[in-house]
Image (cartoon, rainbow, N blue to C red):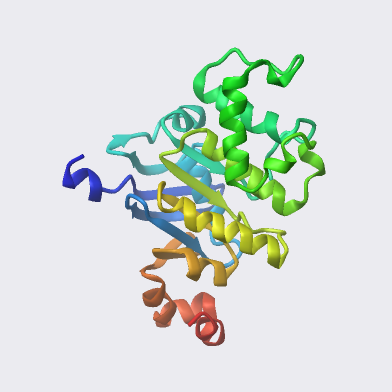
Amino acid sequence: MTGDALTAPVLRLTDLRKSYGALRVTDGVSLAIGPRELHAIIGPNGAGKTTLVHQISGLAASDSGRIEFYGEDITALPMDARARAGLVRSFQIVSILPGFSALENVALAVQARSGSSFRFTGDAAAEPALNDVAMTLLARFGLASRAGFTAGLLSHGEKRQLELAIAMAAAPKLLLLDEPLAGTSHEESSRVIATLKELKREVPIILVEHDMEAVFALADRVSVLVYGRIIASGTPDEVRRDPEVRSAYLGDEAAEAMT
């Protein structure tokens, strides 16, 4: 791998815009995400964070602007093509198959990646190759003992861990995580944070999150989105000390609490 490949952005957003009627939700967003970087996007409710994630993932088409993924223009690609290229996202609301077991949820993701003929129409162990990979992922995310549990009956924190296991089963080249700590208890959020610290060593991550303590513990860089515009972008310390960020979003007391 060349030096350029090690430092070139894996994702570049240039002047992205999205409006719904007269409401401009994202307004000229430009960002570059580096390899093995966890880049957090923060901002108040209604700032356009989830819409921006929708634009990156392909769930929402941009009105204008350009998205490049590993040097390729993917602006016009649909969501499924972006996912096949390695741009994998999780949702603000847990997205699992609640009637399937934890093992089956992950094995289905492995199947989608591999093109296997695996079907859940009998004994799930009929496809040991898929299940071996799925079990390895479940163990990595602390869910080996929950493999046979119906996913819908897992705790909220376990569902979040399962969602991450499903995402990693897709062999992502970039993870888009939309509020993975939403609804988790303190203990559950600590577990998810520890997991994300491990994951950022091997895959770049864009993290949208309201938990500022988690953001500043995890992020290599932070961008602040307010009214659809990036008002600041830099290291956590740079963003924390930015007067405009304090005024528009964090506030002096919140910013000081993150030091």
